[in-house]
Image 1 (cartoon, one colour):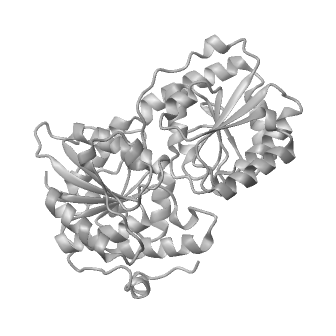
Image 2 (spheres, one colour):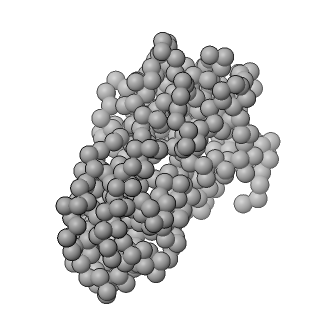
Image 3 (cartoon, rainbow, N blue to C red):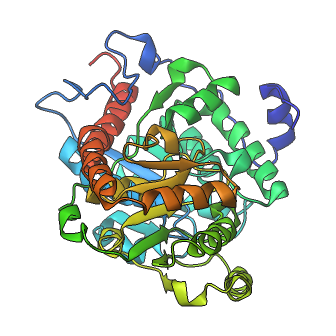
Length: 422
């Protein structure tokens, strides 16, 4: 898509996204001493004074599903109070977030938005933010960015946008991608700061013209888990693979099923558990037809949605994520590492920032069944090498991707926005 200037975007989207000239004259986060330009090799140090005033933050989210981005939101809801932040959540859609997040009821509000022109919803969220006396708004999707833009303008609040995946490549529906991309670009004209979950997404936002002083990379993180015992499986002949996802076209399950069929001809002791719901019943039917046509029905189980991903992963020998595109920093890969479960994944956006080929797992070409099949075959050749990968996977999570670090770094962004000289 041809590059659009900020002025042209504003003209195109003005009827959807009112813009405001009220931008607070705060020093940018990375333009002051001790800037918070995080990377994976640097541990957060001295980013929170010992005595602080609690910050109220309203997260504006879609709330329809409970998958990767929602897991980030859930964990921020659980961990931010440790950083003297009071998190609240406004869901723009009825869905699974409130049912499964495990947060206190008084922290999660349902404010259904019937369409992008539902100004009554925006008015309700403005009243909610005012009643809660929040000091920062935090949006997580293009739709919620549009809402945050308007609410922040009305209440004169700073707001943060969280980039979980590349909006322009978030789905296989190109028209929807374009609309969401335009809404996001127009909304971000007034955004105070942008958090990206990976270095690859930060580079993408820089290519789009956003100033580096407005960007902070806060890698996703997940809680520590009791790791699997790889040595108890050292003589086990059967290999149980698992795909954990909201199953939709960009996740690449068709490619994985093709790869599985290829691998079974030489390695018959492999099965695949598909953990997670399908995006639509129609897509579920088409995938089941493919399973039958490939002749792998006896080797594949569809287990459906779970709100306890770590427990569902515990019996796996490897977690497979065959995504075609659109991965910022996949939470399921981090959750596999936290358990010491090696990963087979495609080289898509932020995934190689987590898994190093041949160390914590194996990386394949996206969209290539032959490449994924070769990596599966390589994984199942040696239990000894698999056990070493398991140990290194667990260590990788402990060193780089904890939920405590994610919360600390997010809280640091909030504090620099409301008190830049602290």
